[in-house]
Length: 381
Image (cartoon, rainbow, N blue to C red; front, side, top):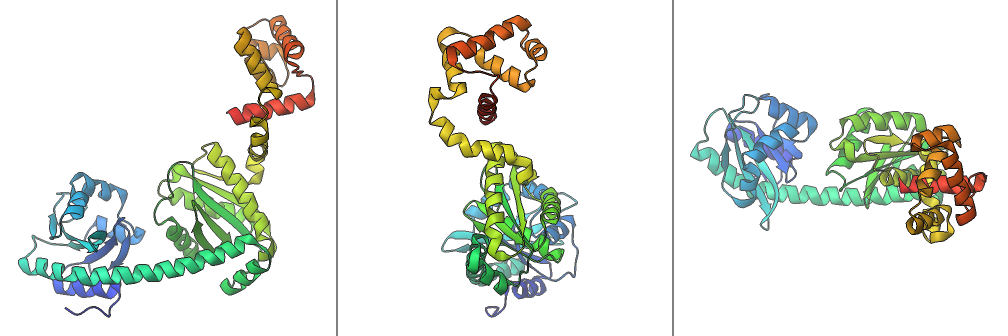
């Protein structure tokens, strides 16, 4: 079987003809790399896998529970899998390795138990598929590097951004969007999913992952970028851990660094607040962004800040000045509502406020003091 000049889709198609059954080639993360032509729908699992370019989570869990993935990591021979589930017909699967490192697998949907000939054909296909996966990965890596360089130039603004936008044929107005997580690493394949989603809608955009953040530059305004981001988020795997920051719209690529700056600030605020499953812009997070900007200064001042002074007094005297100040600010300076929230008499609350001013120098009738305290309480949350 000489398939060395064929791409992965051609290999999958040729294997399907030789085996008399549909074939899917996947990478080590169960992402579809290629599949044979649609001559047979087979079952729900294959349809969902091809449409989503990823094995659906329900079937991944079934395969995992059956120990199939563990066996693929250990074994080199074909494995027959029959989960006795009407939604997934039996499969013959074999691991694909490169230098003993798993790089993917070949899946064959069978109508019955495999024959020795089918198993032999599958074994002989492994080296061919391994070479094609390696070649495809090199091509993808090269493309990804070029894409990353262009996106980096775009979000940097100035003349390099103008040239990158010209190369990519991205005409303004432009909006930068940043995608990150509030816990854990970014899901594998998220850049590809985002790009495919925007391509499907014929939206001019470019995306790349830079460190732990995915940046998109979209040829649209902020309102439409938010709408697209929110729609994608409803479809994304692990969306409860994803945070999406949308920057301001700029007229040309040379100003795109301004939009990127917005996304960095907003994403930082969303991560700080663990606000997963959220799409936000600067207007939504301005207070948090400002608070985080002054956080380092405040943290370095210790007892010199209003909150630091109140905390020290509470620690030394067993008082409740911090709780009193917090309730007073949360209720807009209303003594009756503040004392009710603390379950104390209004005069008790007034005495505490007076003590805070006399003993700690924290005067809650002063607007600047209230502002600093509110920022500190926000940061504490």
